[in-house]
Length: 322
Image 1 (tube, rainbow, N blue to C red):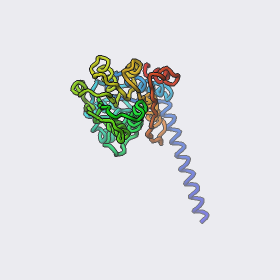
Image 2: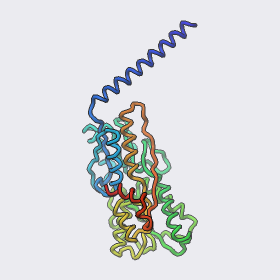
Image 3: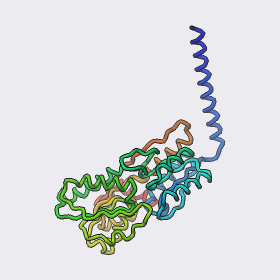
Image 4: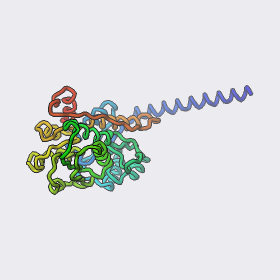
């Protein structure tokens, strides 16, 4: 009996030593190799809506000592195009991928995750109500939509009787857009507001003509930054028939339309932290063998014209202008 215990103890000790030795070798190898490369794939990468997100990526890349590369993309992106870009980046030495998923890409992204770590940003690509197979960093999109409705109700003391609304999204088939719209409409369910129309462009299409063909309403609800800036542009040109815009946005253009009174209220997701946390998680999965990337939910802020120049809001606007 004593011999068995002694052998068990020696075996356990030997295994522990081996684990430590392997870990030491891995650390030495990593210290001797070049920086890890993390590639980032987002739709319309040059668009100003990504400024705060990209600033967060850059700050995290410096802190984590990794190379970060943002892939140049156009204004539309399909699942097949996204797959080709990911494969190209892996072939070019990417050790991990951060990607904005497009509708229909979930299975493809999961398969790519078997080759290199894949982190999703903004929203999952899976169907509403299903859990994503991959980790996601982004805001709670349902909460964003509900928060927008709450701010609108505050401004009208909870009484929207006789008011007509139009809901607009340029990424209408994305999970983020679906969740934001659901959050907004659920919060408005027991009010007297009348939703006259809901216009949504597929994720991979421009949707430029959507606002042109809609009847006049009192309020336009924009569910993403591109929708908000387009609605703001239309309103500035007197093409929204006097409608006031409420929306979700995260660009300097969105802030401009708020400052000029075209937008009544702006709900701003913390895109800086989306960038920072997504890259941090991806980098840690490369430097720590046992690290499993985690979902991260970022916060949001409500910005109005009368608090635009508060210290907190100026810090947010600063990240948008980098």
